[in-house]
Length: 273
Image (cartoon, rainbow, N blue to C red; front, side):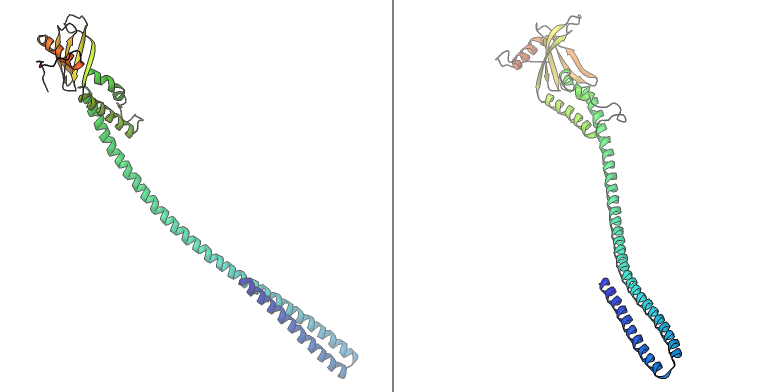
């Protein structure tokens, strides 16, 4: 649209220039005719020079005016283009301002969410550490067969949480692993055969021990001479001797292990804490 306006204005300027030139030419011819009819040759020559000079001056003025009109039209067109560009730039600035505001709000929301996650992690870290300490204390009451199974898990519990690189999720899984193994052990009967000094003479005897979950355990040697019972204590399992019940304990263990098909009641020294 602006380019069309520029073309129209420029054409108008050229048309005005041509019209002015025609008028000057007609006036010159009329003046020449009048001089020829009334004046001498010298006067005619002088007058002719003046007319030529006047025509030249008018032509220069007309050309300058036409050029000025053309430049004016071009400037007006440029002004329109620049005005449109300025409007576009102002709109772009407004959009950038709106986008910046939205980005600030989003950044504030993300920062608040991050702070909430950090607070949750701090609370979770305290709870996980409490569970780790509780599991370590509880493990002192676990029997040897269970301790053998969970030893790798207990070793993964950090002594100094400020220096550990283990993630909270990994540490929590370790605690749950220990508790899962303890619950599994507590729900079953476990047989263990090992060498122990049950006579008090320093001689190692082959002994079979039956753990009734985490509640109690009974043991007897292969000869059926020495027997006893074990109970969980605050510093580990505590064992007491009950040699008078050796035969009953042996029958009890034999029935469980499948060494005999005979089922009968036996008296064993059991104490539940």
